Length: 220
Image (cartoon, rainbow, N blue to C red):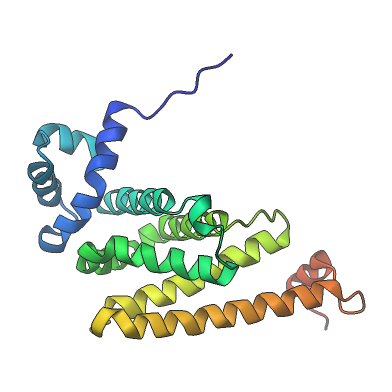
């Protein structure tokens, strides 16, 4: 029987450092200086910290985002989510993710600007998809069909727009962000309800392949 290996020592150290690097990137940017500050904060040898953390800014940001995802997953056990409706689960997941990133909000702003650079767009899209996928899985989604992809694209758009509002939110307790998030989730739930009705109606059901074919070869 094959043995499943855990993370390497450097990977474990990277995970330990990642959130602290994000918090220190508020002052030092996504640089070696942030890594050194995080190492000092956690009592880690700075040379080991530099070996553990990625060298490029985009990869450093990616390591931070992955650790935010892990912290989110650790916070939401199935027992905690069991009594929630799907809408409540999605809202709680998005909101807690913002709370995790709260100490690094200005660094997150800088990180988004870096990921928006042309050379980093593919990485940003992959990261966004992975985050949306994680939140849906934590919420209990098990779809594997076309619905699987539309749910993640929709949630990615909701989370992304909410993130932008949150970055500039100066209201007490992020009240403006909370109100915006509630409106966006209402839109998602309305869309999901419509989609379920559309899929369940045989006279309105359209072949996806035929639809995509029309997009590629529109009628003249």
